[in-house]
Amino acid sequence: MDSIRGVGAVIVAAGSSERMGGVDKISCLLKGKPLLAWSVDVCQECPVVQQIVIVLQEHNMRLGESLVQERGWTKASVCLGGPKRQDSAKEGMKRLRDCRWAVMHDGARPFLTPELIWNGVEAARETGAAVAAVPVKDTIKLADDGGLVTATLERRRLWAIQTPQVFALDVIAQAYQELTTEVSDDAAAVELGEGAVKLYMGSYRNIKVTTSEDLMLAEVLAQYG
Image (cartoon, rainbow, N blue to C red; front, side, top):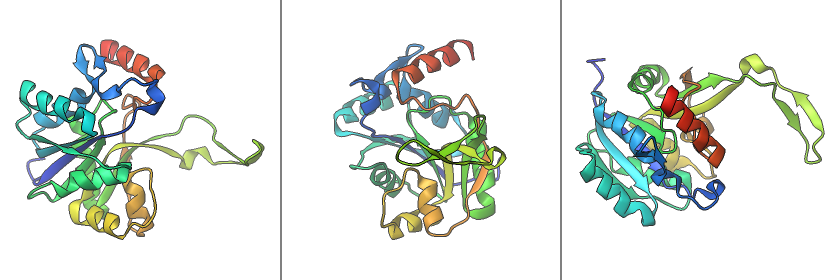
């Protein structure tokens, strides 16, 4: 890993937390630590990450700035996000300096590890874009608007996509520059531009906290995992 240079991390935490019942999830305490701090702490301690940009909603900017000071995040700065996730991602990327690689990560995924970052950069060297993913365990069916099954998908080819998603900075910047529609993750922007995206093994622990039930699961993982 000594050969990896120029890695910047963008922690996107500007969501609305609509499915948390009005609770702002990034400030929720997980084992006594704000949810946001879990992933930023890992990036701060990861030797290959040279810069961290934390993207927040306006009402959380003061919280982010306080955490930067209190937790000694010497690599980190905060910036204001946009109305959509892709707008927030672009705002964060614009603030990366002297970085060749962009590690895009959801602030609501607390169980980031250095290995997920390292493995992502290594995988991205092949195509310029790589995403953490895990094989789907359940059978997945397609349905029409009336709830009738139209197809059963081949499970062995299905992957659940996570973050981090790692890109050569010029690849993801160009993909977003050319984007004309809304996408649900950064990799989709590259895919729409007909770029190749490499999957690499994520972790079933690497959950995203979207609902209060997810937060309860995260508490169990933090306590016993």
